[in-house]
Image (cartoon, rainbow, N blue to C red; front, side):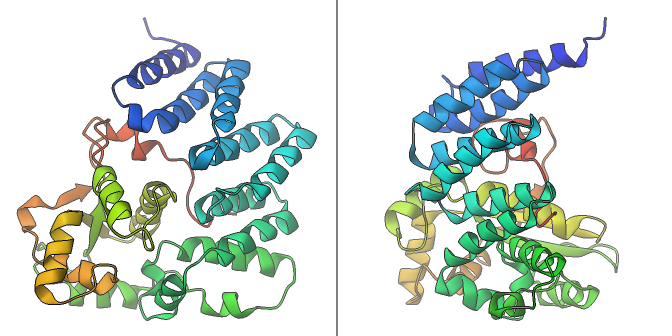
Length: 317
């Protein structure tokens, strides 16, 4: 007998909660996902309670839970409570660019354009000088911040505002020429149809990113929404474009050793790209993995329960 959707969601929520003991480092992310499942199961009060408990734990995970709570409150029409949570999030010392971009897109999607712009502006103020330089470059469209900045520019246009300096540096979406140039520049790519493009990406898994944070704290932070942003970015560039993605998982220790041997700065993107070229092609991962396959971020969870569960698309308003 086929289960009703609410019963399926309940089973999913219970299964997620059971994973917390197995993956304690991913506790907050798992419980946030479980809260959505409980809501789908018709247990909105339970979902809200879980999110509020995570918010009370503070830190960056608490901020992410608060973005989910804001989404729930707005969906339920509880505007006053949502505003209170937005105000609290805006003042939080652990607020980062990932939180700001998520809230901006949420508000823009609900038509609250002026308020969304304020959150987009918070996102902009948190971009590093290196990120801004990369956005200005010929391949700025490949930067993770690009879709969010395009969302900001669209909101400003809808508000009738003239372009500002950030709008001027915001890269346009990739054109056919961009993708052709990327394909020509790839070395060791897989053979494919003439219209296919292979996008080769150097990534840290969750454990390796934690190691990179310890080694290079000025460049990497422990939780800046990197994995969710990357997932959404790859969806954007592959949708309907004939582009495929291959992931080359980096080792922080390997990158450090490579940089030392070559006399390079391990915190520079060019160094990471050169290190990627030394990695065996047969170890590259095809993205996206199957829904029931291990997630590309090496969390130990299934893709559909991890990065594959990320909601939304970047830059949508």
